[in-house]
Length: 334
Ligand code: UFG
Image (tube, rainbow, N blue to C red; front, side):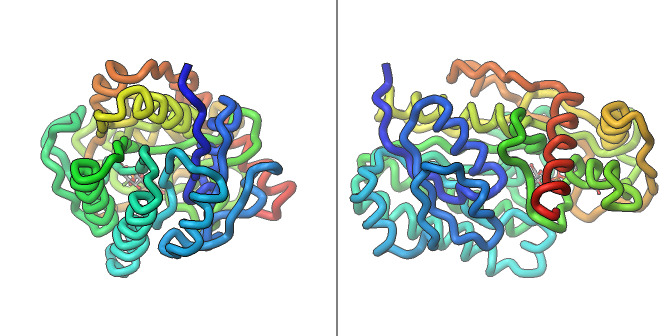
């Protein structure tokens, strides 16, 4: 059995990080969180999980956490994630995602932390020529967000060659849904992601959903994406950690998606099914920088990890997202 080393989760008060904390804790891993609470929420970290409010570029704080908690692995989620914002404020993204990742890595190397898991993104591929897209496809990001993450992938590759540390970079496709027990979910205001926007509309928090383009080269003309349930994604991180511990000389870079896509219209229909009502659709122009379809080739992760998705179903994802959105409205004033 894998020895359960204490894991530091950066960004553990955020959307994906808080699901990773639950997955680790549910699987019996000692876990603690660092988060600067700029976009995360203190309540998203469960009671009993040590919490450090602070920044990952604070070397003094990191040294203290690594020593105090005897950290054996880092899962790094902290960062900025809004693609259009990265276009208007690129330096924010190179700072938050690249410079701060470099600082965190330096602290991890300094403390001799042997394992590092990084949340990368399909945005590192840009607009791929092929679908599904495999890990060895060219990485040509079309926005600073994707480039800021790609630069961190590059740093990890070099650091793992020079220091006793192995890493796993997971390239996420479209993350959606919420914890099936509704312990956490996507809570940041001003969301732009389709499923979040659609459930907000279904609950009357928005008038309608704007459909960004209906002339794409897809079966119904709207954009196709590979939506992955956030709890399946979190489970993949726990398995990746076990793989890094089992083979310390091996690092991994893997897509994380289900390998199939749904169109915008299919997503909206699923939300309608879940509520038995109809969201108002507004057909609009394309959004800049959107590929027609973005679907993962997920053969590598399936061959490498014993990863069996448990919620790979659009209706399940939508149902969980809706349940969380309702809870957010009731208890958190969202
Ligand atoms: N869409 C709409 N209306 C909306 C929101 C989205 O029609 O209100 C469409 C988009 O045009 C796209 C699809 O729904 O076709 C999904 O869009 P999202 O904004 O939900 O997600 P993206 O595919 O643009 O981006 C996501 C993540 C990024 C990541 C990228 C690549 O948000 O962080 O996938 O993997 F970089």
